[in-house]
Length: 517
Image (cartoon, rainbow, N blue to C red; front, top):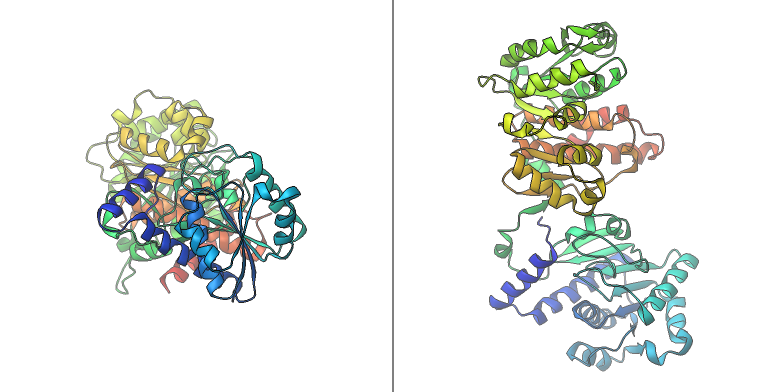
């Protein structure tokens, strides 16, 4: 599913008009679809009290069309206008149905608003839609305050936002302090990027996308998409019955140090849990006996040490030699930032023989090592998957974390193209950007993933999928989806407090099984 910016949505509407589908027709489609979704939400709207807050623009027009259909289906509808609206066709059709219309400037002390709110089962926020952040003030601010107060008193009252919660910037996700948190946001045509940025993402509630009649051929040039279960199902590696372990790829994991032994375990097991045929752990030789007691299914390549628990820089040549037998190298999980390890990482990645065909997943301390090397991407010419969290992305790019947070999609896309690498910018609603400028958004967030080791699980998941033949961009996007889906599975059983990274591992194959069903 495509995701659009404000400018792209405006252009889609313009091109739809040129193709013979005018804005008024799109509005009719939108209003009917909104009404149907509300009908589905409450079960049956007949006899249901619904308050529609309609703004002066097109978003308000969508709300008025919805109000009309809801009234036709037996709902008791009140339309409230925080500011005066032009007496257009949609408002006239509402009045013809004897729907009560209240203008805030005529509602002294908001008496009529209080009356409507006191019985409303659903409040429809149709005041501001796609567009830039606009300060909310005056009667609109007062109305939102009254609705917020009633929601505190009656949590069962459902708040449904049309396109976006009013006050959310559709590109940046920034929100006015007065913005009302929705239980459901019905976004029109295509989701807007701001719905996946904080704080907009926290105000959205359940996100539902409805078709408003824009011809699908018009979105072919949109380069951002959501990762969906259907898309993941279509690209998951096949598992032929006559396969052997080589069929599903071989992963060499270079990970672990004296302080971070567990990172190696989590990354290796994640690669196995998503179906890699063989996983070998290359780690400091003094750690191998400890890890062997935990990881019985992997093979090992003990590496020489600079000091106990830390890989020597001389080990780079061993990795280069071993790579001829592997499809993927995952490097970085828990390696540490010891000087010998930093040099080891640089030598492995930046002096890799051209004969090596292994695909690369670069995580954690390997990213930190590269960030200390000016122009590293010019020396590492092949595609690789980089998995930075915002702090690591700041070190790699030289941007501030604030700047990254303000434009996560733009940042990931810019540097994926500049570095000629696949970048997964981690966090709530992770962004996966490819060197060709295309990007995918993982429309999921789980607080349980905010704990140590979950990034190692993600890195191993991606490496395991990459070894099975997925492209760099597809492996990263599919891995991100499976990772959060596994977290959702675990949190559904345990709750998100106390979830640990190891809990995700047995959930991964279950998620894959469920997606394939």
